[in-house]
Structure formats: structure tokens, C-alpha cells
Length: 361
Image (cartoon, rainbow, N blue to C red):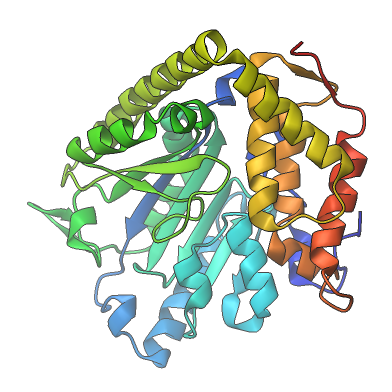
């Protein structure tokens, strides 16, 4: 594997997100939980209406306060305009920033904790957005983890808040507590049994949003979906956390039933899907990003069921980031030779999956 470019500012961060290196059985269906908190400074217009001078002013103020946080030595502040497009794309793949923030051409920044479990985006849709990502279904844990950070920010920055409406945000749907919780779920069983359509309709009726792998406007990759709590205008974060917890439990139950249905009613097809995915990864010579995610989904399902040995979920999670388009380009696997990235994905897959074995019969 090529090393991290030593001349890149991103070399200060962990090579893989913390949540990709953890999570056992509890993270089989709900891979991660994310909690995001939005805040805006009093006396400043929202980022979409700010001029360059205003954005720089907000960034300087935010950077000043963030640098004084008790655990600031565990993170790095990046001015995204100073990074290359590929470095910005790497931060998107690691979920430190949103695709929207990466695409913006105006002054904006992010303070990313080195373990990449927490980040503070500056001048995205709101002045400050704090995110925390944890493995498995754990919204309360994620919320509790960022409480010290929110308390410090509240102490040093004056955020705009209305007595009746709560915290004011650029998007009216986020006002109130301005807390949004999301689940990142692997649902191959529901996709195979066509139950995903019923789930999507159900969660939409309940006020949740279903999104693709990279969030709003993105495609579904590797049978992985994001579920985000919709606008509730509640002043209490506990309302959003409770709703997402209940949804997560229901999703896990539905996926478990779908997998049981596949094992009992279509075992040959299920075994073929899993064995074929592993075989392709062990013998491939070129892999696109989309095909890689689809094959990873099959192998991950095999691990969950107990039909594959010699591998673990954490390895697949870390490979998801290592073999991302931006990561490969960042590490030097560009198109200097025809299909260079596709070839590199295949080489790495053969290396990692060589010792894995299908034991499903």
C-alpha cells in the first residue's frame, strides 16, 4: 500500500476514521451514527449571503475559539481554500466535511479531530456545524461525546437564539435544538427481498429522509443508505435522539427478518451471491469504485451470517476509504497508466482477501 503523502496537510490526520476501525456485531446493520449540531453567530448573516470579508471574519473568530478548546491539540484546522481539490475530496470520503462544503469556492474551513470521529465545519450552510460519528446505533453516546465541545463554544461565542424558535439556522427546518441525527446502514437483505421500498416509504411518512452513500443527492452504493431525522422544530435534542434510536431498532429488526427469509427461502442464491463476491475480489484484475462497493457488500453480508472466515468487518470498512477514488489519487495512483486506479483496487483486493474462505457450504 502506498504511504500517506508526507507533504500533504492531511498527513496530520489518522489514516482511517476511528469508527472504521471499531464496531463488532453491534455495527453489522447500523454501521455508524452521526449527530450534527448547527450554530450561527449573532450579528452575522448566514454564509450563503456573506461576502468574502465576512466569511474570513467568521473563520478567524471560530479558529481562535476552537484553538483554545481543551483538546484542541487532538485536531487540526484546515482552510479548505488552501487545500487541493483532491485533498478536499479525501476529507469528504472520510466524512470530515460535506460534499457541499468541498464544492464551495468561498473561504471556509474545518477543524477535524485527528481520529476523524469529530469535526467542526465553518461557513458551510451555517456558521458552525459540529459533527460526531460513532460506530453502531448509539445516538446518545454521540451526543454526550460532543457536549464538552458545545459547552466551550457556547462559552466563547455568542450564538443567535430566539426564545420561541430556539437556535436560528440557515434552513428553517433545522431551527429549535438545531440537532440532526443520522444512521448509516447496510441493508443487503432488504434490497434483495424488495423490502427497501416499503422501509423507505415508511420512514418518509414518519418524517425521516433517505439518502445515498454520500448524503443528499448521492447514489446508493453497496446497499448502504443514510437515514436522517427530519425537521421537528423541537427545542430538546433528546427528541431527535429518541426518534433515531427507535428507527435504528426497527431497521435492524427488518433487516434481520429479511436475512432470515433469504437464508430459509433462497439459500442457494444467497450463497452464490456471497461466494461469488469473495471469488471476484480474490481473482479480479480491475475494479471500478461502484463494483468494489457492491462486492464489499456481499462479503460483509457473508461475515455477518458466518459464511466467511479469515476476515473481519473492520478490514472492509478501512478498505472502503483506502480504495476511494480521492484516496487513490491522493496517494499517487492516478491515470498515468491506463486504468491505473482500477488496477490498484484489484491488486489491493487480491492482497487483502487472499486468506479469506467461504464456508457456507
